[in-house]
Image (tube, rainbow, N blue to C red):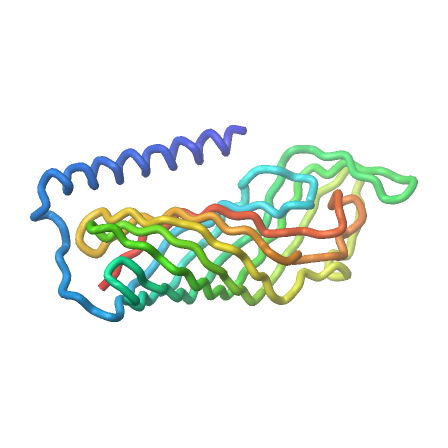
Length: 226
């Protein structure tokens, strides 16, 4: 709960700061970055993922990872554009709360648990822009797994070979998000995405409460369009 309160406080501070900047710019339209109409817009992205894996007996977006890469927009109409991103995205789960687990007739206590999933990801979205270039949209994201690491500390010591239960090599998500235009080419982006297909069907005994697992993630990022 402490981590969640900290994340909520940070998210609230970012939202208030961004809203203040937008309000100030609205009062002085000359501050806005006025662009000549173009078909293509490219930019860079830097931010963080706050993720969990549904189906691992832990709840909460405690796993923090990178979300970095590039983006290209293609203008389809005055207020509509398609975006394509190429990202390095870290997902997974983290739990420090003790959990009781069972494997057949025996049981053990999970003290710490962590999954780190590194993906190369390509989200594609359709976006609607307002007159000040803030925009929101939705779409799909395909991700290819680069590396996966799963660790646990238990009492009494329980040795499990997690490599016997591999994660799938690909992940398909639906994506919803919005970007607030701060100043010139700078935007603040908030996004939610969730796996449409399971990322693993065979779960280590005692480390999951159902037959499938899914990525569940919020992302907060800064984006600069050139």
